[in-house]
Length: 545
Image (cartoon, rainbow, N blue to C red):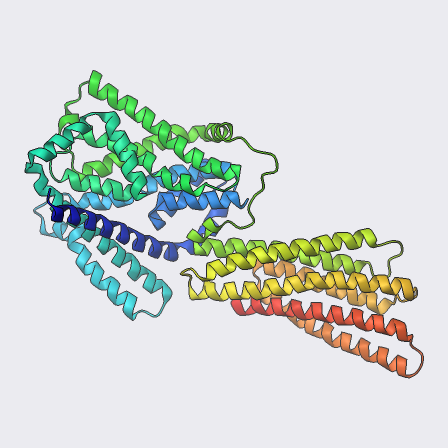
């Protein structure tokens, strides 16, 4: 094999991997927005999870990327370990779509219509359409579809380069000698595992095998063990991603590896029986790209059918392999979620809702202390703990959102990220005012025991109601209710101004208590700031819906 032939094969593989990457990114952007909704609906049963895993893997064209996302979801506490089993099984089936497309390219036909439909024949036209869509379109969705077309065309060009370079090797005696080593099925499994692990793409690995099969020198007996090994090799990416995560997240990779190892063990047992006992002659026949795609799918489907009923046992096995350590904690937001920006945005929004609930709960607790008898020091300490918790969560959310904004996200998602950053700042300030209010109340209780008034009680109730309504409409993403809450907040601001005017008027007439008035002014100012921050949050929700 000459240097130029080696370069051609390596260049073809590079084009293949790059095309896969471009196509995968385009598919993620086009389909990612539905992931969160499907995640909630289709992971309550292994069969549903299987369908979900297959669908998402077809959408993003990478079972490894999906498994990495699962590691991040479990590490963040968003998903339970048992929910991932069916998804992992489904991803193994979904990843076979690319091999079917490549298999069609290896079919021989004299029919002009079917010949024109072969991927390599269509790829140039698809590339032209993709470039036009990418350059001329204004909508992000159309550009994503253009990227998918371009990625597919580059992928097929790489496949064609490898096929054209490898075909002449069939006549070389040196090539025949190398292939004799693959008569050993166990060596085939090892080679398939290592090669797939290195390039971190089972679809690309199977594509190279399909290109080699076009030489006519690859038999069924050689190809089948390699395909089984490729299923094990695809676990490498997930294994690497599990470094530095919680024990529970590590178990996702353990399930993935166990599933593929058990499937390969059973498959090899059947293969050895067919080859050494039944002596099936088909194993000596040359395999085609189409047959490789067929076996790849059948093997993954049969493995899933066999192991799907044992989902709970796979979870138990993973837990025995990786035992829980005391003190291990879930990550607030795992950066692996950034593999799917749409999913990352939605999960960060959920964490933002959690921040809001803690912040608002602290503020409502502070308001409830107004006019309350007894020592409030313990409650004050609890409010201060909540404030510190909010500060920590806001910092983590902000860091995650900044990472997310640097990714290739849609214009709508970018606006939503900016609004979340602003909203988190408002929530943090409301939490700060919860601490300020309780400190003012303590001063009033100590220096002006008769500070309590019915008007302030009503005011506190109104603020609590506004926060409760805002919390609900923010969690539900209800634009109409957010508008109503905002209107109520503006009316409440006006009422606060009137209360303040009466306080000043009372002081001027000599009827008011000067010291108490200072405290009341401080209290009103904090309440006004809280309502203004609530209005800001409502504005973000209204503008982004």
